Image 1: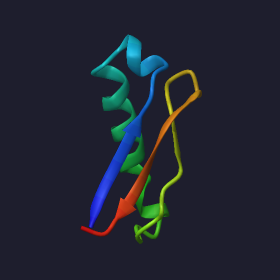
Image 2: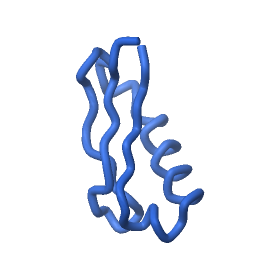
Image 3: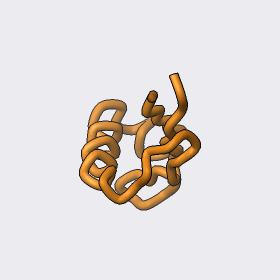
Length: 60
């Protein structure tokens, strides 16, 4: 299983370390609410709640 996070511009472009760190910390704390099956994964939002990407589970 692979856990893939794709981030676009937005707050990520302004803070290349801080925003991905926040996104991963937030998502990591909520993984128990997902099946973690291939194809699973919602949108990812920056600190301004703008959609900046998504995460997904893929088979490796």
